[in-house]
Image (cartoon, rainbow, N blue to C red; front, side):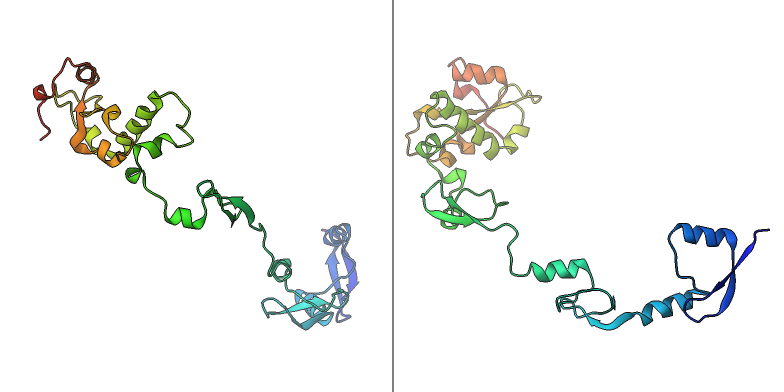
Length: 229
């Protein structure tokens, strides 16, 4: 049986006993004030705290130690203190940018990846409404081999006519892999032609790779290809 230690409550001055092993454990943790009950511990804490403190940020009442030093502003938590002190401050102030389309300066936040000003973004054309020459003058195509022009147009063709990619070849019915062939070649359109016109479904054939090659090289005539149902 463990021995008992005689103690005096730090709050009510009442004498009480505590098991020696528990007493030694509290002393080891650095406890200097002992209380006979949790009620006395809470009462002592409240007696030495200021209850009438009001948080300047959320207006909540809270207990504050008398020994704590403040500059007149009291906060119930570090979160409220940070919210109050950072009020009116921008974490990431906007930086000046230059619009890549019109060249005017505009401000945008650091997490905004747009390279166009607000006016250019509102008036931004869709890829269907741009002409062939505008497509060629893009930074990703400009100055490169002429084959990039048709490749870029075909890339948009696949995006416009995704539903056609699910159909079988109009000539042989093969459906594992089909390609979209232009009836009127891209090179035959003027630079003022719109991509919507070039990649119109009326100008597209659904063919397998072999029949696509035969059609492009004149070995397969348009009259020999059945129309899509």
